Image 1 (spheres, rainbow, N blue to C red):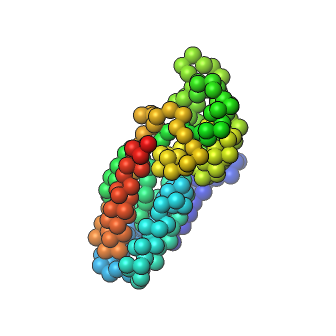
Image 2 (cartoon, helix red, strand yellow; image 1 turned 90 degrees about the vertical axis):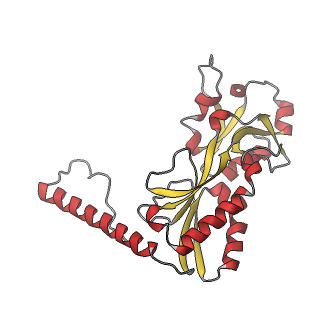
Image 3 (spheres, rainbow, N blue to C red; image 1 turned 180 degrees about the vertical axis):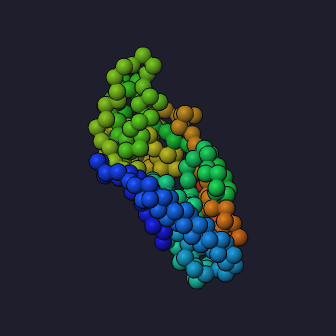
Length: 252
C-alpha cells in the first residue's frame, strides 16, 4: 500500500526545500509502485483472487448484491469486496479494481462499457400530494441527499423565484431519503430505478433531462487483461443492461 500524504501542512508550518523534494520523491515512488502493481495484476490470467468493486450505495443495496452473489456461485475462487459509497474511489490508486459509476464523463485513465442512460425523477407519496396540491416544485417540502445541496435548487426552482427550496430532511444515503418520502414527508429527486419500484411513490413530474446521466462499469486501463476483472466487468454489464428500461425510467 502506498504512502498517503496530507493535502497541506498545518497552519503556520513551512516546508524546507529538502523536505519538499523528499515529498515529491516519495509521491513519485508511490505512483511508480502503484503502476507496477497494476501492471503485474494486468498480466494475471487466472479466475481467482480478490476484486474490489465500488458502486453507489443505492445500487449496491438494491440490485447489485444478487448479481454479485450469482457471479460468486459461478466463480467460487473469486472473492468480491464490495464498497458501497457515493464517494469516487480512485481506480488509478487501486482504491478499487472495478467501478460502477453514474457519470457523463468517465476518467481518461479508465476503460469500460457504457450500460445505458441513467434517469432521475421527482417523487412523492400519494398521501403527500393529496394534501399538497400547489403544483409548483418550489412550494413543496424537499428531502435531499447531501451531494444535491449545491445543484438541485437551481435545477428545480422557478426562474422567477429568489428563495431556496424548503428542505425538511437530508441524508448521505439515498435509501434513507426514499424511506422518508414513502412516509409522506415531502418530495425528492430519486433515480428512476429506485422511485419506480416503490408502489407508495408516484412521479411528481416526468424524468427531467437536466438530471439525466449515464451508467458505466469501469476499470483502469492497466487491468484490461486481468481475467477475473474482465470477466466480472462483462458479467455486471450484461446483468445491468437487462434492467435498462428500469434505469431509463421506461417502466411507468
